[in-house]
Image (cartoon, rainbow, N blue to C red):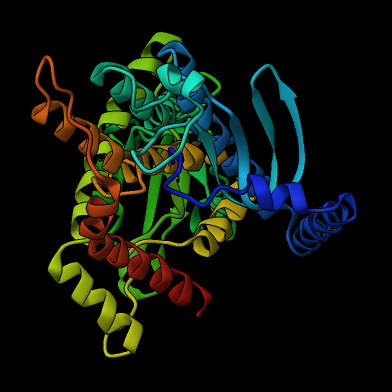
Length: 400
């Protein structure tokens, strides 16, 4: 989120903080990290990756500001009391106690902020529409870029099953009819009882109507054909459905180029799904469902936003599963983070884009127009209240 004078200036409060107080805040943060690591280290790893995504978001704003000729006085990860910082050039980089966001401070984000006259030409408000637009958009675009790259990496290395239309290359499940009969991982099913089985779908279509039947599965193993007698099992939930106990292990063989192409397809698909999801969450019917779920008059079916609590739980499970699952989830979350920050309300990046565009439309060549934020902010307040309701409700429901 781009933050200028939309948020309270912490400089004076930080100046009043003694070094001892910063040590206390730092110790509390370390204690929280140790507690989370002791509870579930995978959650801590995932949270660190999430913080990294926030850093990249703010890096986009920082680079956009510098490229646009603006002064960036602060680049902080977190909010609240300052724990540690250092200065490089005119920018102070550092860490604050509450690691649930970050900000880059560019003077003159609003008409309300008092700025040294010497710095006025390098303020945000003094720049052209194009420079301001690019600076604000750079943050969400950095997250979307991370999501895109993540999907490309995922599909380059992920052995994606071809599904029902793939060949019946077996992945044998333990304690099933397939394992008991001697079928092995990697066996390619050629036929069953003499009936050709060109795809995995053909295998399931043949097996399902024959619970408990004795069949002969012809497979190719190490270049040789073998006939394997099998007595089919039954589905645990439906004894009228036969079960062999396998799944398809026929996967798509991709290189880097194909992985990038498949990643691009998934990026477009995820972006579309998440735009639709955000619209659904904030629609009148979506807000009504959320209120009903919160009050207990509706079952929580998961068709709602997740909070940092729920995301961290899922993220910990992804880390436990492996690096590919982690890359997938971090990619999805970066797309969500980028799109969510484009909501057209203050103090999100989308709100600043709306303000900048409105100012451009109202400006004339010899008379630039600037919004009075004292009058503009109340217009956004009802919409921000809705966002806070959705976020708070997600936290409560995830804690439940």
